[in-house]
Length: 318
Image (tube, rainbow, N blue to C red; front, top):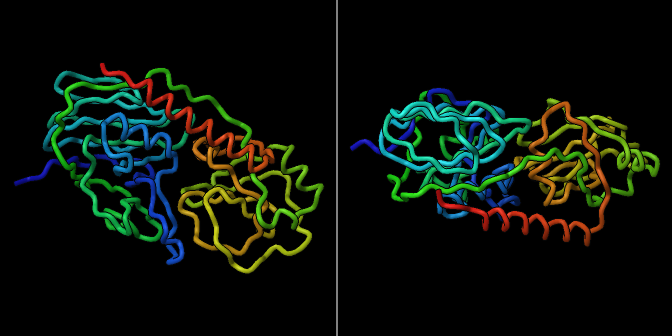
C-alpha cells in the first residue's frame, strides 16, 4: 500500500530537513546543526500541536514546490514568506503562521522569502524521517541526516507520518519582521589579541554581509581587525555564533553547521538571543556590533524567551 507523501516538483534553494540539532556529539567531530531560525521552527510545530522537536523542511530564499500525491495533511509555513496553495477550490495566497489543510492532488508553492533568508514548512504529525545520533537535521556537506544527508531534490518522495485529524486551523496574527541592524557580542577567548584601536572600530563602524554566507558561516567585510599576538592558535572547540578572525582581519561568524574545532582567534560571539535575527539578514546588508556583558546577554535572552511565550499565547483557532 502506497504511503502518504509529497512529490517534489521543484526543490527550492538549500531545502533540507532540520530539527533542533544533535547535541553531545561534537567531541566526535559532529556539529550540532539544526534549524537556523529556532523561533520560526518552534512556532511551526506548536501551531500544528506537534512535538517541539519534530523535523521540518528549512529553505533559503525560495522554497520547494510540492504536490500532495497521497493522503491529507495540515501544513504551516513560518518566516517572512510568500507562498500559494493550488487546490480544487482554486488558488490561495497563503499567510505565514497560519495552518492550512491540503488534500490529495493539492500543490504547495513556496515562492520566496521577503527581505529575509530562511523559512520553514511543517506538517501535522511530521515527516517520516530516520534519525542519526538522535536528530533528523541534515548536513549536506558531511552527508549526514535523512535523505542520505542530501538537500531535497527534484522528484524526491517526501513521506508524511499520518493523515490530518485536527479539524480547526490556527493562526498567530501580527507577527512583524522588523529590520535589525545592531547585534550584541560577548568578548571571545582571544579578545585581548586585537589592538584597542581596531576593536573600537569593530564596535562602532558598519560591516557588510557578503555573499560568502551559508549554513556554516557568514563572512562580513569592514574595518580590518589588527592582531597583535598571533593569527593562528592551537585548534580548540567552537560554538555557534563565534566570530573568528583569520589573517586578513575580516571576521567570519560561525553558524549552525560550523566545524567542531578551529585555529583562528575569536574576538567574540554573537549572543544567543540575536542569532535568529542575524541569520535572516540578506547579503549586502550593513550591520553593527556592540559589546555587552554576560549579565546583559542573560537579560536579553530572558526577553527573547518572553517574546516567544507571548506569540504562543496569541495563537487563535479559526
